[in-house]
Image (spheres, one colour):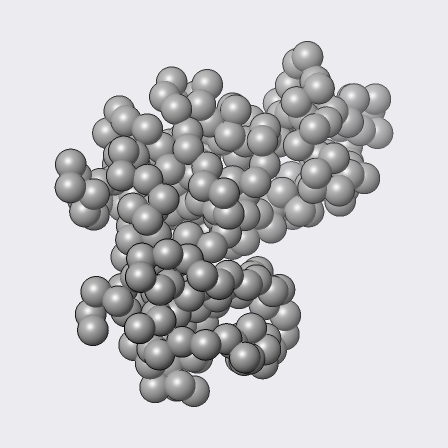
Length: 249
C-alpha cells in the first residue's frame, strides 16, 4: 500500500507518499489563489492508494476527494517522529502561524501553544522584512549572521515593523544589524511559546522558517538546547498525514 498525505498550507502545498515506512515521493508548490488546482497538479500522476489531508485547506481537499483529514498538530507529531524519536518538543514556524508542541516519552502529544492571530514572527513576516531591506531570503539570513550587534526591533506587527525598519535604515542603521534584530525578535517570540509547553529536551524544528540558519542558531542559544532540522522541514506535515493514513487502515 502507498499512503499519501497532502498539507495545504497558507503559503505552500506539500505532498508526501509513504510505502513500507519509506518516503518515496515528495512535492511542493506555492498555494497561490487557487489551492485546489495547485493540489491537483501536485497529485497528478502520483501513485497512491489512500490520501489524508491536513493544513489550512484540508477541508477543501476533503470536499473534493472525500478523504479523511487530521489537524496540523497531529500531523506534525507523526511527521516529527518519522525523522527523530529523540526530540521532546516541536516548533513549527510556517507562512502564517507558529506552533509549539511538547511530547511525552513515547513521542505522543502532551500539549501545544499556537499563534495564528497575525503573521508576526512567521515566514510571511520574514519575507516582508527581507524585501524592505533589499535582501532575498537566503541573503537575509546570511546578512544577519554577519552582524556583530543587533538593532532592537520594537514592533512585531508586520505593518508597524516595516515602518520601523524603513525609519532605522533612513537614520543610518546598518542593514545586517537590523536583519539580526529582526531575527532575534522572531526567535524571542517563538521561544516564549516553547517555554510555555516544552520540556528541556532537543527541539524538532519544522516549517519553511527552519531553512533559515540564523533562526536555528539563535533558537539554540535562546533555549540552551540542541535544535534538530530534518532534511526537508517543509514536508513534515504531509508525511504525518500520510502516516496517519497508514495507521488507520
